[in-house]
Length: 308
Image (tube, rainbow, N blue to C red; front, side, top):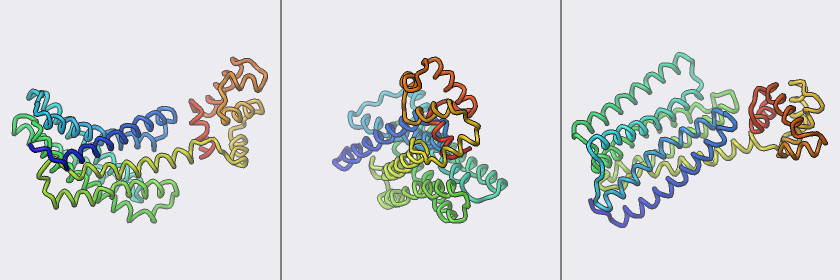
């Protein structure tokens, strides 16, 4: 397979996208582990599976470039299952989450989920059936899988994104409305590149749908950054924190500890500021977390901000 200048430029772009998606995935995963925020958990999934697809594409391109095919038939099929599953899971994550934000009944939501899973299973079966039919998963097969099946799966995401965007103004909950608008916009970024793939017919290793991940990743990063700043920075309105103290019956000493926690002080620094031992501070912190059913400062900040 001929590697031209366009293909080289394209793979450099894909490599940059992969680096961006990988960095974002690790960053969001860290904050999700700390905060247990479901929105951040969804962000991890929406970056994880595309990261696998992009990584596999880069490896495949390099193999073609050096004309070396190291995979046995069994290894190739396992590789195929991983890639195919990642493509389908990417579609499922976007669609199911968007459906959960849409103003539809529980019955309609369940039916939509069943339909989504059904379509995903059919797509996965088609990909794997074709792979097993050709008895292996060569690089040429991989390129065809990516160039043919990836635009199809992401087109389903685009349709769901358009539907979600059309229903944004019917969502009463402000937070849900914001999430639906942002994720619908992310899904719709794939439409132009899918059209390019259809026009150019995927005659080489350049698959434009893959570059759709850069648009999605940038929007996702902007959304994550804004969401995290709003919900987890320590700038809290005095009225909001007083309401929080009253709601949870926080004692004066616990208020002192919480105020210093919000300033970012460590346990030893809090002990010095309050003229108590570090063990005393640890006891206060443990009691505060137990009372609020949280585990760390990120969750404390979020608890105060959203008052749940």
